[in-house]
Length: 319
Image 1 (cartoon, rainbow, N blue to C red):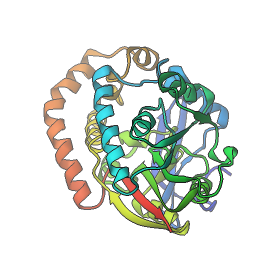
Image 2 (cartoon, rainbow, N blue to C red; image 1 turned 30 degrees about the vertical axis):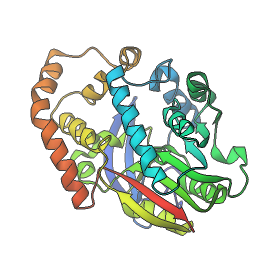
Image 3 (tube, rainbow, N blue to C red; image 1 turned 90 degrees about the vertical axis):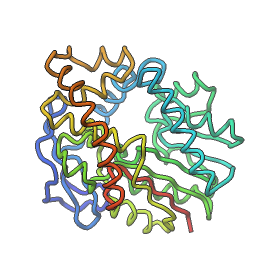
């Protein structure tokens, strides 16, 4: 049965978002009131997921996704991510699950950390190995049998929503994280104001890549069940939240979905993913940008104040 909760396996009947058309399929997001988490229905097969994450579909041959200006800004955001972690744990062993091309792990290694990364498959893991000489594993976390309490920090930056079995992932993190160690998880927030405003046009919905859809309540409850003490929940992220609003507002304005986001990607990804851009969509995008940019920042600040941020980042200590 496909419409069951990704956490508790209860049959689901409440539909949060209907009729999301992607790749020739129609998806719905069903919501579990017991877990406060949504599930993508139908769930893509492993074969479909492998195709979705192939290099020509998800990253360029260098492992990068965006043009050089955006990549430079991303580097600054990764430095800030390091500072957030060292605030709690000054050094040690860190595992980055879904480490991408390895930029963040390279920054941590240069700061004296012992680093390990995991990626979805060997192809994506090879980017970090080739680009930074990092030891990056491929496949599922549970396959690698790390010792109990091996890591001081485990990081999952916008990864848990992609996982087939998030409960098993968190349980394994609990086992391999030392007592007093830090788990950092960032995810889109299904209960955010931008999710409510955008519905199926919400930028961070990203079906079928996202298999589960967390609310803040759902993620916090999941971590507390696994003996984590919640130290902080960040509801404003300059990297994700303003752009989430911006692209969502453009999407609901009748412009072809995610045009601006795709224009920011590398040339090779644009060629493989984008249909030719119509004059109408191009004009509307650039006409609305001066209006939507400041509005997106204001909305992001407001939703964080009312605890409905478009994305959330949770810092949790293993008790």
